[in-house]
Amino acid sequence: MHGLWRTRVLGAWRVPAQGPLIIAGNHSAVLDGPLLLGTAPRPVHFLVKQEAFVGPLDPFLRGVGQVSVDRSRTDRAAVTAALGVLQRGGVLGIFPEGTRGEGDFASLRDGLAYFALRTGAPVVPVVCFGTTERGRVVRGLPPLRGRIDVVFGEPFDAGDGSRLRTRKALDAATSRIQERLTAHLEQSRRATGRS
Image: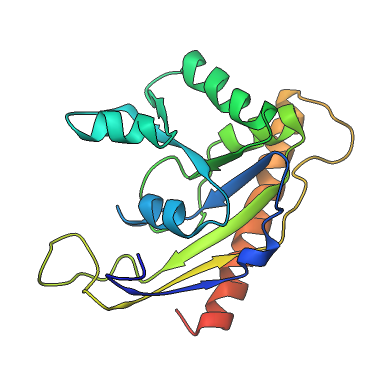
């Protein structure tokens, strides 16, 4: 990541050095996942759409610990694997919008809240800037040596302290998460000068 682009990583020191953790990132370009894998201070196991596990990419993704998920239904095997990552004290990576979009956290799925409430793992927000710019050498990727910023935020607890896992608690946690992620996005824009 540092060889192909001018990648600046801010706030990586905020990521706890040990214990279960969920990294929640914005997702607006294909490069966001690999970028977070390459810049996070700890190994991250992302929930990755099953469609990506094809050809030579399949053994590579599995080899670096990524978790295949069927987004068309509740994928119990993926949920079990993700819970296992957290139970072993690892880092689970989630793009809470569920798919690529504007990267503004405008619409979140409740999977992130489920994992946070179920395990009590803190959530670290992270945003990537510059990944949506398009270069001329490789379509779909930013220009070579273009500037990319990755900004890690303060860890937070998604729950309200009650440890409830009801639908109401899940919805409330999703709202709290969205507020924190949106606030981190705005702070990151100011810190990096990105719009």
